[in-house]
Image 1: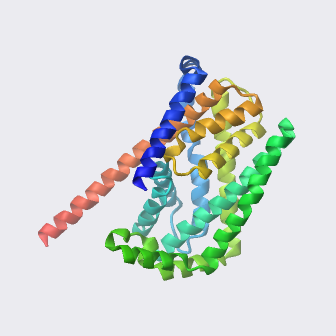
Image 2 (image 1 turned 90 degrees about the horizontal axis):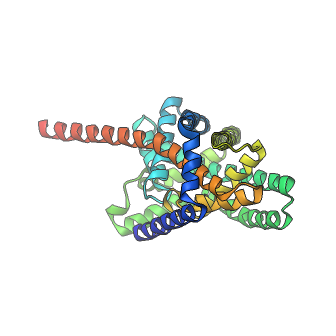
Image 3 (image 1 turned 90 degrees about the vertical axis):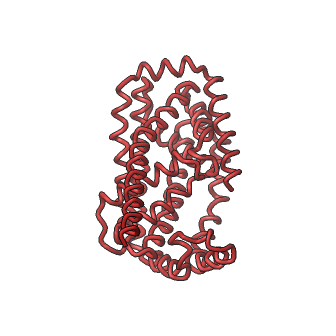
Length: 328
């Protein structure tokens, strides 16, 4: 798995560099230079989708939990998935551990993350469907829209199967058995230590329909907020687009990143998606690449301090544990 992720990272980085060279590195740099310091205003704007996601996550945690705590964990989850070579899954493991440390039972912490990820998949499916609908209205690209609609229809059974497995398949109990067969190195996350309990907790949450609906609504609001970020970034680059085009860009690019999730941080995937969708919408390749670099800049400026703070806190925690062991 590590080798696959590393190969995907190298290939993605190569694709990204090739696209920058093809579209003109100097032209892209000029666009970014013209935007200048105004791009930094996008960093605090990035808190909005994360805060909305945290509010949705809070709805499916059945114990009292502070919104700011969930926001901080959401920031770290995004930073781990977006900035570290973990194939977009390490953030969820980190989220479970941090939520458990905040006082939530490990089983319920794991179940809440599992259900939240499921809702994310459903929310992004609806979001992409909206993007495809808007694409047809704006561009009348019937062939492309038909292909995307077919892909959506083909993926619907996969989502239905995922829901059915989580409700009836004892997924984590089976994973726990596999982990035990491979030895202690495969264990250690809240997902696998108590597989049967996690399955029961997930089924309990999936039966709380009002909570699920509320959480999904918050997630859709968060996706809308990300479109605002995309629209504002294009404005900073001197490109005026309608909000509908921002929705199309964001939704279809996110779909590409989720489909090819193995590539860390979506390197190359995000750039190809933005260039391809931007071409259909009449946005030049250099603007699309500049937009991608701006989005990455926001993630770096927002995520790196969070990762450093987390590592500092983890180091202090470990030193404290060692000191207590020595004193004991």
